[in-house]
Amino acid sequence: MEESFETFLNWATKLGITDSPQHNLLSQSTPSSCLGKSLYVSHFPEAGGRGLAAIRDLRKSELILRVPKSALMTRESLTANDQKLASCIARHTHLSSTQKLSVCLLAEMGKGKSSWWHLYLMQVPRHYDTLASFTKFETQALQVDDAIWTTERVISKAESDWKEAYPLMRELQLKPQLSTFKAWLWASATVSSRTMHVPWDDAGCLCPVGDFFNYAAPGEELFDGEEDLESRNRDTTLQSNILWDDKDSQENKDAEQLERRLTDAGYEKDVDAYCFYARDNYKKGEQVFLSYGTYTNLELLEHYGFRLNVNPNEKAFLPLEADIHSKSWPQESLYIQWDGKPSFALLSALRLWATPQNQRKFVSRLAYSGLQLSAENEIAVMKWLVANCHTLLERLPSSIDEDVLLLDFIDSMHMYPIHEVEQISFACGDEIISFFEDNKLQKNCNAVAFPLPSKAIRSLGRWKLSVQWRLRYKQILVCCVSYCKEVIEFLSSQHISCKKAILT
Image (tube, rainbow, N blue to C red; front, side, top):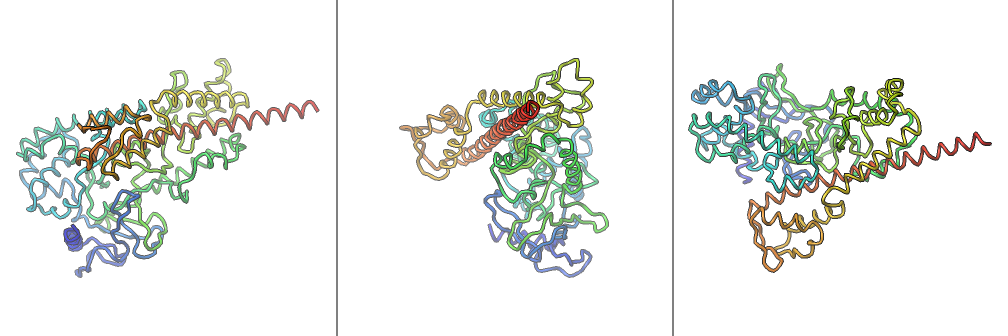
């Protein structure tokens, strides 16, 4: 495998891919390796495996990798020397650009070692954990209705796209194994998770070496590491809640600045290459990250097949009654933030909803501006959030503690040759049994023989992602309850103090 990877790097070097900031793309000289001046490939288990690390100290915004246009895999480059593929693609105008690129990718895979892209294709993952690959069991393991519905929609869309593209694959006479839904899931997940934006094709491009960067969420650099969210809430002064408008105005300004630097790479026409820049200052040996944009963990699972333990863009949505919805706020803006605080829009909508109908017209401007309407109104809003978070937590099939135990069990299934199922049967027992049945695993004397088949191992990984996602959702609700109770306590104490002051 190492020899194959070195061969790939040699291939990439000959194409002009370089991490040398001084290298001239038009230079006739070929460097000894495409990596080694700014970056090197390393293994980062906590980030999912292979990634790129700094071989020297890197400065923020410094150019660290260039990939010439001739090295980018696009629909244009794949059809340039394949007349049959080009003509067939041209006839199927109803297909989307991503469907066409997925078919092109499958056709290129079918060429085997004769493909000009063979060395690169051997570096592309063979399996993805995107939502489209989730089984019914893994989907139900998410537990939250919105997440289940999203996953079912994604799966249905993948099946529909495959059926629409199947006539084209048949016309190209692709090998039977490359025309299956399983093959389609691989190709479409490759396009979804590994392509980068280019101005001439909506489907984007596959970028050799450039796709080795692992993801870091925009805003993640604001935090030194994972902290207990409840502690973070306690450290935040509750007085800022009263000045929410000023606080959110600043947050909106910060968000606008963040939007301008969401991505750390892009195609630059003046040098005819994809250029990558350091998103932060990196010390020698540190992993160098790339930001693909702002995504919740569910969106990361949908498009890329992974989630983050710390994601400042994570959101927990609450079921809201129709009379809470406001035309002034899109529904996707009504959520609980990753730190347990209600979003600006949700808080504004609830403040207005908690106001008597005959008074809403007079206070709507204040509510939409993010101002607190009154202490009583704010307490009513916080009590509503506490009650609804509690209701949601009670309705979900498992508790936070049970999910933690279940994750320990899932991890142990990778580690031990035989695991006693009875040890965990008191918590999430039905779910564990469903996993065994879904993967056709036989239990004997309350134990399961290992090692698991590869298909079951992949299912175990997706199951773990589902449990991790729902656990994080529940933790956000718990943090919201803690935050709201602190606000209630603070406002109540202020109210009592005011009364005493008046009396004296």
